[in-house]
Length: 328
Image (cartoon, rainbow, N blue to C red; front, side, top):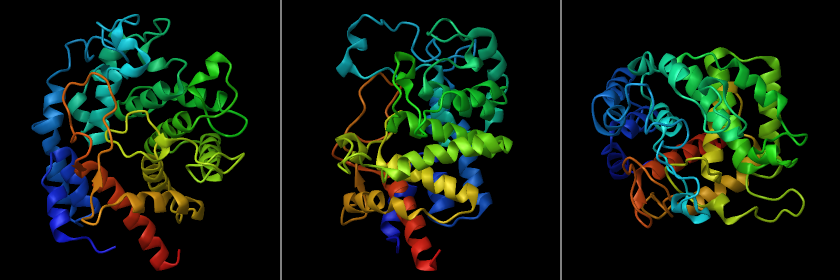
């Protein structure tokens, strides 16, 4: 895929949190260039704004997954209200995803060990809790910050469903895997494996989870072949905890690069959905905003071209198309 220089310039005209990735993955800039941009995350733009909101006890908004002032019985907890994205876990997710150097948060792991407890049964922060998605975020955030989260890594092996995936509702008795839970679990496991080397058992669990999604072509029900749900083909940034074919395809790109393998051909249907959503000018539109309280917006409103989605979509298609061109 030949990248339009004007489109590349448009993506480069972004916060350092996005610009460095565009420089590295699409523009072919040398490491000293994109590394310098990446270092700016700590001192300007989104990264600096979010870092300034960290509290002396290491937390954000006074809570682990929900802000301290969240009313679990109030309007903000209604089914259609989404959820707040201001507390500690979500803030760490953003900073890690943007590429902040963990050294900037030196001491945070110890502060959270001492001061942060999960809303669920007041459990200690780095021990995780019972929700797959929360544990996946904590696994990645913990190994990024240098906390011992080996117990959470083992938790995923102990709570994998028979069909290979995971479901946050296992605690309610569910025995069927979830697209959302499985993808988030895989992302956490891959991040942990990349940082630590992982184990044979962890790699086997990750590959079984990948197989769950690949058998379903990333967007279909295994039983009927019908589309799983409209959310699977909805393009939204930030991804948050929500599944989409773009979020999943980006994961499979990362996993293939980590493993040194070619793209699995069963990704083809999802890739074509991503390709079909690209507009003639090469951009992807933001389709909605996941509702819920945020510190500040990092992408455009619904209906506008999104630099973030355009970056992710372009990167996935370049990876896929390059593999086909090379015959791998």
